[in-house]
Image (cartoon, rainbow, N blue to C red; front, side, top):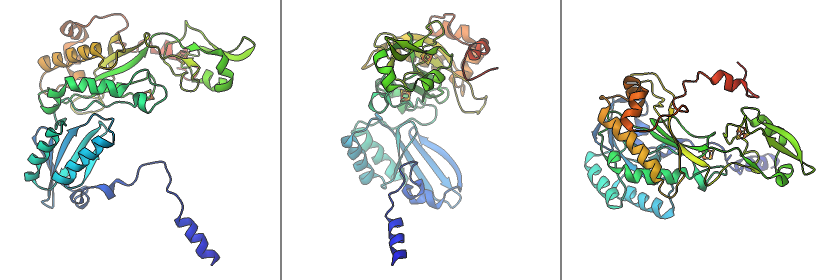
Length: 364
Ligand code: SF4
Ligand code: SF4
């Protein structure tokens, strides 16, 4: 009896909340059946992938752009379309595209039509501008300087045609990041927050809210020191050293760095993770100090489109943005795009040894 109770207790344990569930259980049955046994794939039209397995099975995947922040209305709308025209199986890509798998080519047309009728574009495959990968923004994170999701929605509204067509020299991956330190990614074009002033410290709150040694250790250039201010333990920042990275703000919110006027947006180009045709590349800064101007960020959209359409016109087939710039050279990039060039652009990391040796963490 005692043993039976123990077993029952074990069965009633709540599932752990970390990690995601095993994806196999949600996969389309044809994908489970042919897992690891695909012969080839092609793209019959923009937004549709076609996979053929060694067994002879075929599957078509329709890729749909979403606005990323989906409420119950949008989720129900999309799922109703999938239930009616698809086969009940979907997945989300890391760039917030919805992918719907069907086992017959005849189902692809009506599925695309239903998504288009509901206002959702089909595309984002091959040499297109696929959905922008972006960070959480105001809705989910506690430290953003802007709403990454908002920048994405407003930009993709303007790049709609480039999503539904495959007319770029190669694929274009755009990324955004709403703080300077955490989850931003490498991108052919990346839009990142850029703080331009050191944090303002609310000394009344530091002692109650912050673990001062952790905050001091967090600064990459050792600009923070413990201090007593107005008789209370607090912190001070050596503003000459501070690089305005914002790393002290997450562990110590009284060190406020977000500012409606001084938190700007910067644009970086030429990053990629792929090693097809050329090695992976770091992105480089090409435009800084753009206003953080919600809800549609028009100044950012203008610069992104300028870079994108110059690349589209001037790059050779299969050159990624970084490859194109490597071939024509940075001076020509600034000439062609008309972006102003300053001494702060195109860091070749020559000074990195000195900057990093100022850090509390790294020594070269
Ligand atoms: S980029 Fe920074 S602010 Fe944005 S979601 Fe990630 S951690 Fe939060
Ligand atoms: S962590 Fe960054 S923002 Fe904070 S003081 Fe150091 S350099 Fe400045």
